[in-house]
Length: 192
Figure 1 (cartoon, rainbow, N blue to C red):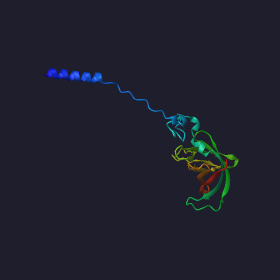
Figure 2: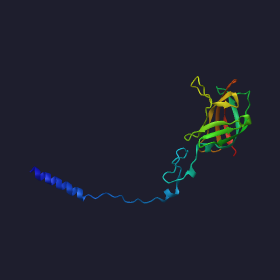
Figure 3: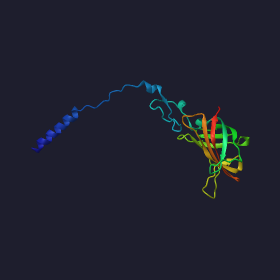
């Protein structure tokens, strides 16, 4: 009796296996918008994969340094660390030039005489460019930012922009010098 059940089970399994047909997917309906929509496929870009799916096209990529590039008019307000205004140093107007060095590196000129450049690194995540650290101490783990116009002043801080506003640039720099700490803060207006 066991042989009959075993033969019956084996026969049933063979019939089941032989009667199965491999599943085939039906082709989908192509979406013509995909061929029209272009997207950036470079992970260094701010707009990486925006508009995906579509056609990969590097000409639509927007890199962090491009957001800041331009010529700006800036009225500098100077504050003490407690955010009271420094009345000994009246507001001064600067014409600033921000150049793109690479996809995320910038140089800023216009604060110091002789167009001494300030170097920054822009982030692809938050529309912010931070002052690069070029001064390191070998006896401590402290980094000091970079020199600002003279060897007695060091600079730290950042530039930032709003994603929806290409004309205004927020500046917040901290300068540590032999005369104390000052905070330079204000908004620059893009003119070119």
